Image (tube, rainbow, N blue to C red; front, side):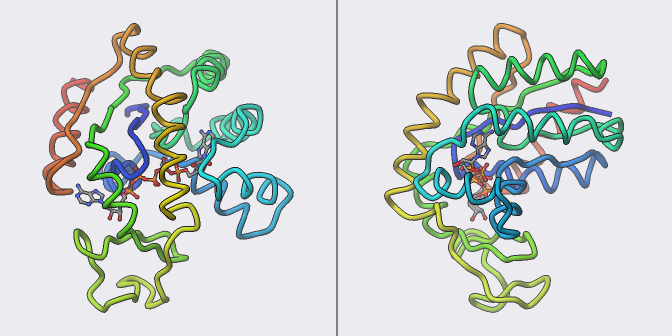
Length: 217
Ligand code: AP5
């Protein structure tokens, strides 16, 4: 069992690796981006509020996210281990996470920092295509078998609203200003393991697995 955080800039491959890792270790995948997008899709009050920030590429206010993550971590399935993808994104969120984990007698085992140069991130987000079923592709690096169609459900693929050039620029700026300081925050706790996120998806997966297996020994 392992409790981990995946850190990384927008487009670093957190979602791609998270799906593979959660299947490998049979742990729960908690993606705050997915939870927010689900709320936008269902047109909930939270979804309306979050969409404004997300479309601009800004972070949704901490108070909203802390509530979401608290509710999710209190569910019993997190007892088998969990992977946080996209949370925390600010030091305030990290401190709140620490409090929630203490309340439920859990701890983080490792924080994997996926590092990718900015020009590669921009290329990845420009070419990313999503399916409503949750699958994610890249037109060049991870293309579907039939152009524009999901391999899994056959639905049409779409470009995420926040993958526009302007929103990506804001997302990267938000990452460096608000999220990057978490590397230092978790390094001081001895939890950070950097992994190069450039290269093949499978190679990166193997590298992350090596890190996790060492931690679990
Ligand atoms: P979120 O959904 O978390 O987006 P993000 O962090 O910007 O990350 P992405 O999903 O864009 O990228 P990823 O790292 O998962 O990369 P992926 O695997 O898809 O958040 C969206 C928004 O929600 C935020 O901007 C904010 O507004 C809000 N939000 C969410 N959490 C929040 C929080 N805690 N606090 C406040 N606000 C919050 O890969 C990208 C592409 O590259 C894909 O096409 C993929 O196929 C391809 N790819 C992956 N790996 C490789 C590789 N090795 N080589 C080549 N291509 C690759």
